[in-house]
Length: 429
Image (tube, helix red, strand yellow):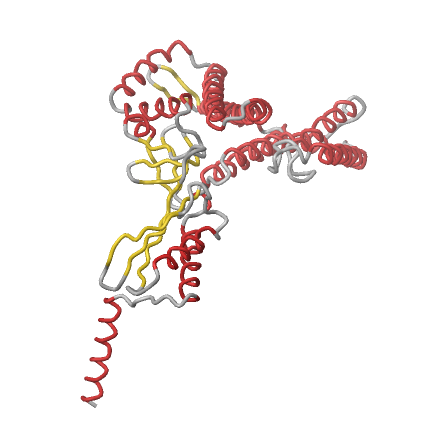
């Protein structure tokens, strides 16, 4: 009970009004500084909430960090003249709030739609607040001693529960710091100096991989893991990659080759195994191709290296469309041809060169079959809407000119069958 006696003694002997006044003053100073920083730099973060400044003045991690510095300085000064209680509690809470804000902002920017990451944030927040409360009341050292006493063996090495918790937290915080540094490097260096999207992706993947590897090694050395023992693990991983993970390794290497060689780039229109669409992202193991109708195809990167891929993107690539129509046998061919060409030329997305063309392709039972061919160079904006506008213009032109449009034989048969059924129904009634 010595800890609680000291806690009660500090509470009774402390000057609450003075400490609360100092605390409020520190919070107001931190808030004023954040308002100024947010007004000056808040709009420079590509529309996303900043890790430090946040979307609003109090959202970022910098506010509790500034408040922590001011409160801790005030605590050290007041501790020379009187007993401090409330400022000590505030320091513990602000430390936890600063770490929680930093971790949450980095993870939300890196994994904006991950429910697992949201769960990890909540668990980490509860652990941080619990550690802050234990530190405020002076029980944290005793809890750490109890955790140190709980030991178990991993092979021949004794490991305590405290070492396991410290290792997990240090590795996690190191990974969060690595993600923040990689994002900062991407925004400040890669986005400003590398204009090509594919090369930007290569630089980002290499930077993040190197930083994660360095961060993992540093975090392992911080918890006392002998890095020389990793050579055996590295050999085991190499054997695993050679046998069980060769497809994953092949896709990973193929992704880097696609990005480095720049034969395919993000934004290119391609056709892979009969699927045609636009490359929206090239990831470590697969490439995402989105069709014009919104469907997405996930293509392993190895496929882009080992199989035939048609790149439809280029300044001289045109996308051809066509419309087939049948008119009456007694129709004026030149009149119909002029109506079809005029309907295609009236659409702004239809290219003038090569010009639209009309061909009389067949003599069918219903009449004359014409084919209207035309080209566009922006299929990413949709092909069906252009074809629809051309068809509507053709229909309006033919009807205005009085050109006969025969009814398809199948429709006539269906209509006749309906009449027979109707007559049979009348007789039965």
